[in-house]
Image (cartoon, rainbow, N blue to C red; front, side):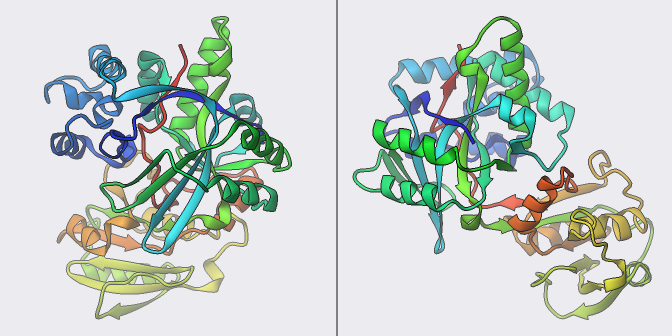
Length: 404
């Protein structure tokens, strides 16, 4: 891994807590507008610029992205953001007894292209295009890509060494996560860069669309004869053993005309032992799935005979997709079918019940492990869409990296 210090615009110590926001893609359009109304002046105005224009306006119009650029320029001039010379940063996130500390840096687009930075999901062109336009218009990278790497004692020791002394920021965000950030000294920066050279690669944990979009813009700029900042993109690197993955659940909005008992019988015939549950089902181990339909919960356990041996096929999301979503409910392409939606585990089981209503069905899954993610990536394979939900999320707005 090659990591590089970043030159960036960053909020002042006074502004950081109110300016930084969750990543753009955890909100739908109404949620983004509601957040901005509740947090005026936050970075989400820049990250989701449709919140700055009339609700009837085209969120993908050039003028919408220009509104975001105008607000970014305003925050630079009004003192909310200050410019900082190149450095690495250490970013610790803590909530409910869980802590993770990553290195904020730039990583090479060349390493992304070659697979040194491995991906495990395909991207959707329309989502990618949105962030491409956003980066082009702002001439800046605003959302860090969440990367993980196999454990390295050398890196871990240097990260711990850097998390001492007076932090740059130390605040609790709107989701109850304590965020503490230290700027690494020039000497520690060089030692960290050397330690990462012994790490063979990294894995995209969260941010496939942001990474693909950043790489596309970088290639455009290189083709236009520019170099420098555009040869890399903004990232935060965490040791894999520190990370917490929550389930990524599914809701299908109709049951193809089946009653709840009919659906349960169909799932049983697909190779599962299905038993009713008196309480909501949050699976405690692999190959167990919770099923909610018409006010009731069931626990479905996959027979060993239907669990493939390969890294992708053995994932719970793959088994559910092949055996139930496709074969029983007719969801052949979960990336395009409007009948299905994906719900992060952080939203809880009550949210699954609400979204399924009386006509649909919800499935709660056991969380995918980082070992499974890395095994799929190492094999050069792709996971089913929406297989992992990392928590806590990385805030946006703390580091705005210029490409101009």
